Structures are given as structure tokens and as C-alpha cells.
Length: 100
Length: 507
Image (cartoon, each protein chain N blue to C red):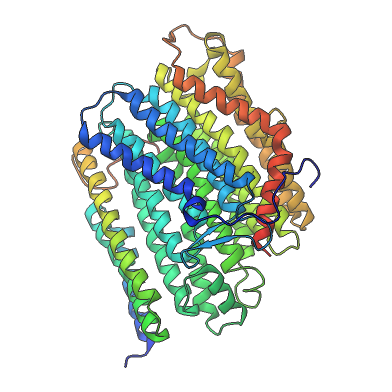
């Protein structure tokens, strides 16, 4: 059996990769993928700790997060679509009508 | 606190679960009813029927909540109703905040009737707003981190779509994009924070977490990071530093009624969840040996109110000024969390709840006045509002009430609620926060009075002619102004309810 700390290390690494992607990528679709990575890092934690404690609370909650991540992407893709229609690009730094 | 006392039954009669969650069910069912109407007749242009259905739903939910509140359901020490294995908690605080959400939603829906004239997808608009209100009402009642996360997403996802509702308008789309990007990021951080807290305690229920933590923990580091990440999720929802960047963009670009809804109801929803999670799960006694989060909220409160007010003072667009002032008000409310553990928990938290109630009306009203100005197409800057007082005196008197009340001048409830927060801060020994509150309120008077000067003192350059006095917008603005004004004497009644509801958390 793999000790729980290694799962925590794995999830922390995935979370940081996702965060790095959000901070550096300018393409809105890559942004969505990075958020997905971060949410799945949380899922890894929940499943690993759920296994360690022997209760199913964490596993069930990770299913909730998966479902909500899908819903979030659905809304996100819609917004990226209207972004493309209005600005002709999916670059998140191109949208500067409002002052930052 | 002195004043009138609401007659609260000591032993509320047993009621079924369905009755206790009636406000949430009413909101959700109205959203589904609109969905059915829209699928039967997708091209309906009968906006009066759509807005009427939506407003009837929120009004019914408001009445149901007030009845539950007056009937003493779930109130008093240890009287909270735990439904579905403790996943939902119906108590005084949940009902108090549901009153805020349903009243704000009603005002905004009534105002939207005029704002949305000649637009398509009206049924979807009202449906999304009702779904967001359902999510907020659930947030107020959430009893475990799982329900907190699900209801927070239920409130957030429709809001993203609402901000980007005018999909041919570049400002609206850009606002929706930025709101979504920061929202998605913060919900990922929030989920990771929850997973760390679960890792330390093995529980997701708020009371179960508190029980685990009170026994002490070896994993202080992991817990600390988890608590900070959870706090970050709330900072986004309440538009507090460091996740406040979306607020000015989203509020400025969004349709003005949506800005009103987000800046009042959505902010209150973020705060009610933060109050419950930090007062129950990470209660100051439970985490006394491990994570002192009150210091984090002390810093957040100080920085948030200062940043919000200074940024608001430099704006030249009214809507953007209101957006930054809403960041500043989030800072005032955060004092309630920063002052926890000081021996007067019920009082300080009650003061924050009271401010959110008053803020719900005065800020919604102010944004709806901006909606009225957008309806007249008079422009967005302070100068564009010049001389409106002569052309639309009733709406401008209402706007003056909002501005003065927001600044803390006693023509509306804003004075009393700020005063209670000040008493709470001084009473718990947070003199620096109290001083910052006073300085920032004085500064806010400067930029709020700029609106008053434009409305009443300056003369119009004659280029703007107001066409029409839209009934729905007027009703919402005037209604909000009347409630704001009535809350000045009524604040004692509300403050008793708020303080009792907050004290029950610490039983």
C-alpha cells in the first residue's frame, strides 16, 4: 500500500501544474484544462484520504466535484464561444474594452 | 441590544422538512416552471407574464421565509433544524439571509422587466436568476462542506451566464469572461482547501469537523493551508481582497440589474457561508491551538476596506465607483469575522449580518438607479448625471437616500448598521479596525457626494432628454429607498433577530 503522503505530494504537484497553466497560458481553452487539473488534484486527495480513513464521504464528494467540473466547463465553453464571436480570438488578454 | 423584541416562540411546533425548506423549494420550482413555459412557447415575447411569474415566485419565497422566521422555526439556542443527516441546517441565520436574497431578487426581477424590453431570451434570464437565488438560499442553510461547495457552484454558474447575458455587447462578454476565469480558479482553490480539511479531520460535516479539531491535531500545517484556501474561496464570492479584481469588471460590464443582484445577494451569500463555516467548523475555540484565522480576517478587513474606498474615490464612472464601494463594504462586514473569539461573538457577527441586510437594499437600489440611467441612455460618468434632479426628481431623491445611507449618514439604515459594527470592533479591542472604519467612511462621503452634486447642483448641458418613466424600474428603486429609510427606525427589530441568530451559532 502506498502511504498517504505520496498521494498528497502527487495532488500538490498536479495542483501547482494547473495553477502555473492558469497564470501563464493566454488561450482560454488551456485555462479551462488547467482548472480541470486543479479540481482533479482535489479529487485525488479526497479519494486517497477516504481510503485512509475507511469512510466513503470523500469518494462521494469527489463524484460531486467531477459533475460540477463538467457543468463549469459547459458554461465556460459557452462564454469562450461568445468571446470568439466578439473579439475574433480566444486569447484572454485581448478582451480589454473595460479598464483593468 | 435595546429596543423592540420580536416575539419568538420558545418551543416551535414540530414541522415537516418540506415546510422548513419551503423558501428554497419555491425558488427552485419557479425556475423550473419558467423552464417549462419556455419549452412550450420558446418565442414568447410576453415579458410581463415571465417577469410576473418570476417575481411571484421570489415574493412567495420571501413571505414563506418571513412566516418561518416569525414562527420561531429553528431559532433559539440549540433549536436549529438539521435536515437530511445534517446536510442542511435551517436556523435563524439561514432564514435571515434568505430574506435578503429573496427581497433583492424580487427588486431586481421587477426592475429587469423594463431593462430587458425588446430583448430575446428573457425566460432564460429570469430562470438563471432564480436558480442563482436557489443556490444562495441553499448556501445559507449548508451544513457540510459538500453542500457548501455544491450550493456555491449552483449560485455561481448561473451568475457567469447572467453577466455575459448581452452576448453582442463586448463589455458584457468581457465581464463574463473575467468573472468566469476568476470564479473557476477560486472554486478550484476552494475544492482543494476542502480536500485538505477532509484530510486532516476525515469529516465534511461542519459540526463533525469542529468535534475532530477540538481534540487537537498533529497536521497543523496541512490544516492551516486548507483553512486559508477555503477562506480564499469565500474572498472571491464576497469580492474581498485578494480575489476582488473581478468585481469592478463584472459589475461594470454586466447588465445593471445583474450587477445589483451580484453585488448585494451574491456577496451576502458568500458571507453567510463564511460565517457558518468559520463560526461552526473552525470555531475559535476548536482551532485555538492550531490555526489563528482571525488574524487573516483582520488583515483582509483592513486591506479590503482601504483598497475599495481609495479605488472608488478615483473613478469617473458611477457604476465602477459603486463596484469599488461594494469592495469597501465587504471590508466593513469582514470586521465581524475578524472580531470573533473576543467574547462578544453574537454581537459582532449580528452587526455584520445587519449591515448585509441594510446593504442589500441600499446597494441594490443604487445599482437599479444606474439601470434607470442606462435605460434613459444618459451615459456612465458622473458628469453625465448632471441635472437629472430636475428631470426625474423622485428617482433622484431615492438615489440620494441610497448614497447618504451607504456613506453612513442617518437618512437610512446604513448609519445604524455601521454604528453597530463600530461598537463591536471597539468592544472587542480592535481599535485599529474601528479607526480604519471611521477614516474610510469619511473618505466614502467624498465620492458618494459627487453623485449628489451631479444630480442636484450641476446644471444639465441640455443634450439629454429623458424619455418615459418606466414603471418597473421606478417601483423597484422607490421600493428599495422606502425600505432603506424604514430600516433606520426598524434597525432595532432587525438587530435583535440578527444578534439572536448569530448567538445561536455559538451555543
